[in-house]
Image (cartoon, rainbow, N blue to C red):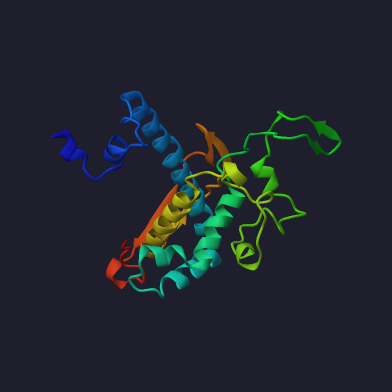
Length: 236
């Protein structure tokens, strides 16, 4: 009975998973994997979506351009929505200006010089994502929310790394950005949103992440009929 109820979901897939000749995961391993999925794959994306709503709704020009692009697609497939250049650039700009992690940790595999310091092999270093994404020598008007910067140029991994970088790049990065695009496309084309009066988001620790302060307050002024919208349905 339990197996039938679980059929088709993520937990069922983990219970059925095998690696070579290895036996199925034990209960403690299943709990650890489930906790990781919820903590690293759910709250993270939800927090980034909160930042996305705040910055998009606070910038009418960005919102208008997103709706213009998405409104031309009819009943697009999920993959086609995710491939829209301006939507992709907007998600990138959200994770640039509001990364939910402040820094990443790396252990040096070889000696490295940073400024005037000589760091030996094995030193633990913490590149700061937040500060790197705000360097005025790299980013023009770094405090301005401007998705077009990602349409006009490319940035190497040591300048833009909201998901870490190189061989330690987050394994959930593609899934997180894909999910954000689909959720944003659905929300922004079906509802007219407005940030609550006098609310200004400030970075705040929310558990392990940096999210908007005081709970992001958004007012839905009008819900649009889905049959009249360009993105009326997201199909797989």
